[in-house]
Length: 103
Image (cartoon, rainbow, N blue to C red):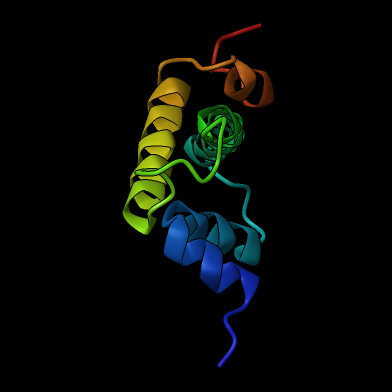
């Protein structure tokens, strides 16, 4: 049975379910949901940049390229990107969803 895009996203991003529910009811998403979505977007962008930067320069070198190493690298990059976004990252999340009271 194929998984639709929303289901796949919900498996990866639990907050996507709340955003989808808010959008389905037609009610405006709470400020926190917008900030969370902006932060998640910035984390995804940073993750893509960090993943490209962390690829081995030379592929096929002994002791590189194992499935365990790839999995560890992906998890490490995702965590670094999430922490970078939480600490301000590029400032993209604040540009998309400015904090309340900011002008």
